[in-house]
Every structure is written in C-alpha cells, then in structure tokens.
Length: 134
Image (cartoon, one colour):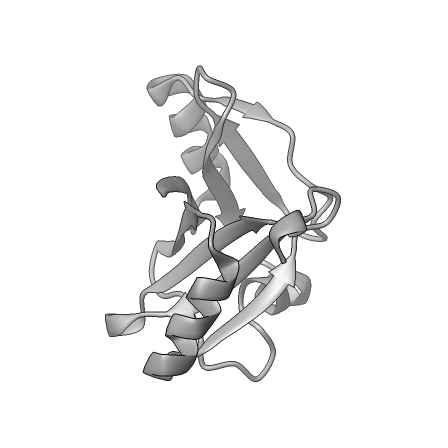
C-alpha cells in the first residue's frame, strides 16, 4: 500500500492552488471531468499528489464527496486520505466483520474503484483499487 493523494477543500481555492504551484513547485495536470471546480496538482514523477477543490463547492461537489444520505463525511481542510491498494475482497470482508460504514463508486474515465471508509474522529479514508480487481 501507499498514500495516493490528499484532497484539500480550500476556502481560498485560487490562493491555495497558486501556493502549491508557485511555492511548492507542483504543476497542474489532468483531472477527470468532474462537474465541479477543482485541480489535480502533480509532483515531478507525474503523480497527482494534491486534489484541490473550492470549499464553497456546488451541489454536484457535495454529492460526489459524500454519498447522499451517508454518514461518511470528511471534515475540515482535508476531506480524505487515499491509499492505493490491492485485495478488494479482503477489504470488504474486514469491513463486514468490523461493521465499519462505507460506500463505493468508480472514477469517471479512469475506471478506478473507490471504497470510502468512515474512520475514528470522522476521518474519511479512500481505498483505491483497479477496476479489473472488482
């Protein structure tokens, strides 16, 4: 496993975007066609490290970042952490055994499957799997 990215929901989206580009040295790159404002910021190895959204958002953003009628919610500046993984069936088995709440979806165009898990203290964790493992 490895950390995949961090989604930051910023009250000053443009200032945050410029900070990561101009001060940290990340570059803006490909982002799937989500129906809300945002940017994916990449490191030198062409991996998107930061997913950035405007905290004001819109209904599409609110609906995407948390399943409708779900108790799984990110809080504060960091919405969730993501961990790229293998072993989808093992994860589902562990979640069933422990009774942990979760929801799933597939990323548009990329066909990566996401399992969002509600952790302690309202921490939301995304486990990311190749869709061919599902």
